Image 1 (cartoon, rainbow, N blue to C red):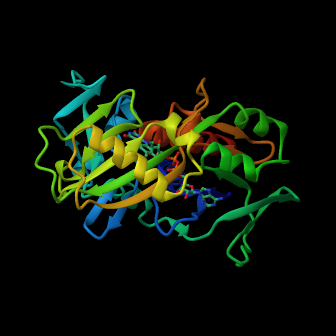
Image 2 (image 1 turned 90 degrees about the vertical axis):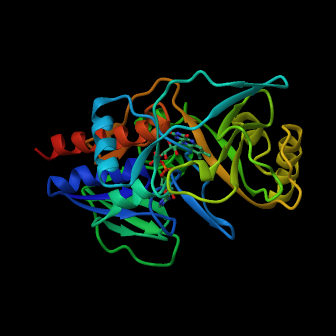
Length: 324
Ligand SMILES: Cc1cc2nc3c(=O)[nH]c(=O)nc-3n(C[C@H](O)[C@H](O)[C@H](O)COP(=O)(O)OP(=O)(O)OC[C@H]3O[C@@H](n4cnc5c(N)ncnc54)[C@H](O)[C@@H]3O)c2cc1C
């Protein structure tokens, strides 16, 4: 059996690893230059900074075991931030007892680790799927021909991107994707040379444009004074078409109102168009053996890194069943 995997985020990588461990051949196609998707890291002039997923949690035994392997391989560590909550003008300590993990030296490390020895074609954006004589054929945007054909195709990409690729494929795919709602996230990475050390590492901000702020240097194996600032999903979605400059101006204004000194700030912006959300009622993954197609990703499984990894794993177990 030959499988095509669209997307090298955590879900696609987890699925591909499990398939390859059972000697199933997998070709991965990824539109970005590297693996990891939304669990990734941006290089700025002031150093690297996690601009997508900030940390992850582990509740399911299978993911707990996986994270232990990551810790042993030195690509993840427990992160114990001094956490605050800001609401209605008042700062308080967070009471959260959650165990939080981060990738080391940065959030893209687990993804890079999972990607090792897999066949990945980067900078390849799949633009069309066609099923002919029981096989899948793919086209990409980059003016390159994909000559191989596939028995099974897995779309490990956010719901709106999966929707664009499967418009006329099958009513069951449409019915699964259409209720999914995903929101954007405007992200600001700010080096704040004049901000004196804050008495917290990260904070959940309520009822403001900003919903999360984190000093990247507080995480294991990071340095520097770069803060990652996330705008809340509703505001980000409502303002998804703002220019970077306008989004930055609004986030800086909010950051100042939280007491930060933004004088001399060096700022980069990133817009995640499909950052969070998905199906209200999780189904884990979707496998359609009769047409050789599957969907996996965080949006089918409660969101978050753990949900993505588990969705990929369960998708792979379903494909292995089909092969038997
Ligand atoms: C700002 C932000 C903050 C977050 N914070 C947290 C957090 O603190 N904790 C947590 O657990 N989770 C967090 N998350 C969510 C977490 O990052 C995701 O749940 C998880 O990384 C999703 O993995 P995935 O594999 O399902 O999807 P993705 O990571 O989106 O992977 C999909 C991949 O497919 C590629 N792709 C898309 N379309 C195509 C195409 N047509 N052809 C080829 N490739 C394609 C993309 O480039 C991408 O690499 C956050 C996400 C964001 C954006």
